[in-house]
Image 1 (cartoon, helix red, strand yellow):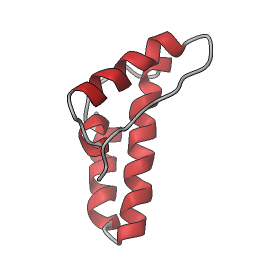
Image 2 (cartoon, rainbow, N blue to C red):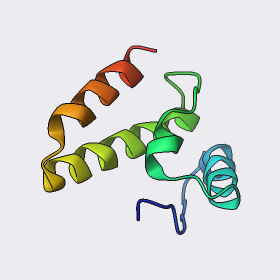
Image 3 (cartoon, rainbow, N blue to C red):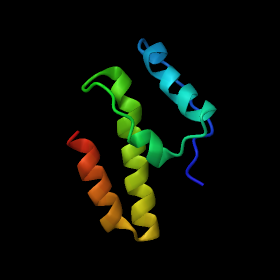
Image 4 (cartoon, rainbow, N blue to C red):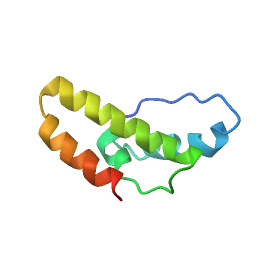
Length: 79
């Protein structure tokens, strides 16, 4: 649960972003691990991290672990 299973990109900056998803899937990263990867910001390549953070938030709200997730997200956003 929480593992990245695939990614599809369409657009002028797709090649800039897809490599991060391939790396995450090949290494068996979970969404929570992927969200912790340091990336330059703001860039098109930083979008996958933001997506992972949003997925973590959604999962936390669904599983009533919001307090821990909010702390993690707060720390990740301030790196």
